[in-house]
Amino acid sequence: MTDDAVEHRQLIIAGTGIAGLTAAIYAGRSNNDPLVLEGDEPGGQLTLTTDVANYPGFPDGIGGPELVQQMKEQATQFGADIDHGIVEHIDGDGPPFRVELSNGDVYTTDAFIAASGASARTLGVPGEDELMGYGLSTCATCDGAFFRDEDMLVVGGGDAAMEEANFLTKFADTVYIAHRREEFRAEDYWIDRVEEKVDEGDIEIMRNTELLEIHGSPEDGVDHVTLARNEAGHPKDNLDDPDTETFDFDVGAVFYAIGHTPNTDYLEGTGVEMDDAGYLRTKGGEGGGQTKTAVEGIFGAGDVVDHHYQQAVTAAGMGSKAALDADEYLEEQPATEAATAETTVAESDD
Image (cartoon, rainbow, N blue to C red; front, side):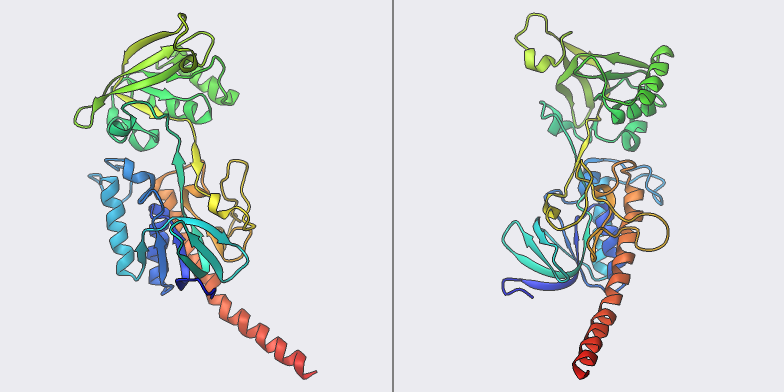
């Protein structure tokens, strides 16, 4: 243990979203004494969802914060310690790994599970903070069914926006896509799918249009939005242009589909591999060890790895895999150390 370490733990888990808490439940049951660090978004993105209707076992639905709280209680019952702490940096030359927190505390650990999630990008427009979870959502598959027969607005122009708009046509009266430019960034496949829905009257595209404000209340949800349009594109950058039109538009729900940012900065320099967007690369495939990263003893789970499904139930599944992989790794450590010691003794006798 380094001299400045507060404590040494068998296993540290970063994140108290569904992936991290599931990993904590499994790790606690395996007597791995996990320390779970909440990070700067305790509970993860699910805490922004007021009603979770698609998590198995809750036929009447359950609030996102309530589900997270129940999972925390379950994890602590099995021996997990949950504490507030933001991981600032990890020294990947382990085990043991040196884990530095933003408050200056330092831990060492034999194994580490990165379940710190991905933060949905937002726009920072007026009404956003008040209405997030009350008509404003970053997950169409999570919340679309709650706004059946409403007009819905999807903000974005990439694959995610096209896919979510297409999905929302199952529930919406009309889905409107607001994109700040003329051309979409999405693949032709998704653009073609959306154009089919446009021809059928289910989707309308609002090009060169940006969201300025969301109106409504937590009690009554979204009432309408304020949009800006300029045929040259990027109307928010040209609000003083006389060609920029600002107008109110009635919708009952707004969905952001402008991407996510994985919370992986603290793993830079560790040797853990990431893709260009910062998502962790794990072993995958069949058999055990699917959540292993390129660094032995560091595992990844949930939205920090998964940039496709991003569902609570898939995060839970990956969290359980990470805990099982970490348990297998930890069980092998004493045997490995003993074998190394025996080899050293044998060589010294020659």
